[in-house]
Length: 551
Image 1: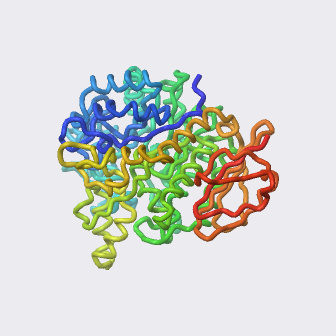
Image 2 (image 1 turned 135 degrees about the vertical axis):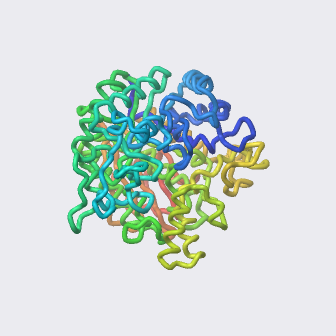
Image 3 (image 1 turned 90 degrees about the horizontal axis):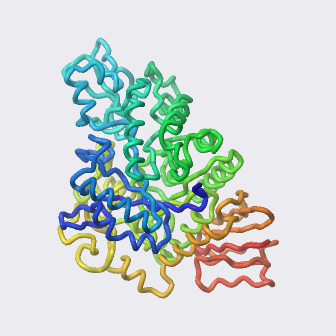
């Protein structure tokens, strides 16, 4: 039986990890080549963003075939080799399951367009109003209406995301049966983890009504009770039959209550959940495409609210600062680049010593940062281009619009992995599909050559989770909530306690360690941190984090 709370997941954006054939795009053989690097780091699972055939309108999240490998990434034989070679190094593979929608290039949608009634019921088709207007006023999360014409008919189809991503009709049992087959297909290949993309928006009502005045329209299709039924059905029929499979749901705009329901072990739904509230603390008035410094008080409150709420509800969070949809955490939460080294360690400690499963995004373990792009043309992502145009349409000058996009673009995290200081950072011998961030000083080879390197710090954190039961299984209690710029919590298990304190500021801050003054120093973001038995009042340096343990 898998010990869930001791697991650490490493996310790979395949397109940007390692290119083996010089075409500028990362691939499966490239991942295989770097498996020893990941094994040495100590991770248990690697999560791959979509590697299926796709027209790539949304970087692979527009899938045209769930049960094949896009040739740009390699072959099914390459994937099978990855499973085998990873398992030999005690690493399992987690795949992205995008079950809310398919590409309009998918056979199912093409058959529906051709008039096949069976497949038309795979999608959410609604007749346009007599005046030609859309079935409702829902907006796509990528901008514009969530409806697009269904061929040369009087119907529109729903797409909560890009117009080339048609939402599936989960109320049709045939659709659910198809998706069960997809899971069984990959389980038979040896896949032992699934990340379910935007899984909490699959439960649309039979009638797709506009939101009542003054309410958020997301409530009309998010976290509907039927979603829990669908996930339990998938669990019982497929991955729940395996003792060593883990699952994580990406939960858009969810609540603590629902996150607990999705992940509480006795409900047999998902192993853990991603939520994003803590990554919206630099949104002005809740709007992503704005540029303001992050709000520390809001960040702390959200982390404590979710940490406490999930512990009380016995659900399981998946913690992260970085992923393929977010700008790099270093740029975002460490406001002075002078302290990037200490800040990187602080951010890691907040995640890895927390209650929940830590996720590492590729390059995080060497301190990768956002790229210094100078033109919107350097961005590949459709969302970035749409946002830039939207900001221009709102009256912003190009420099202002670009500055906002530069701060928030998803491509910030998608730049190629930086392996060394050679041409193209050792990622490819060809031309990279996306420009690189600064890599001459920040790369794997340079970092590993340092005496006290960040990679080794991550190794230690990963090992602590496996050896310290209080880190894996302890509870969660907020601490020092009245001290400015300090985020802290206590983990407790069977009388043993661990205190983690993280100082997110530059001005020295003093705290009283209380019962932890006699504690054992477990790890710190500063190599020279000293806590002795006479230390009661401790002065935290800029971006200093430390963990103390008492029995």
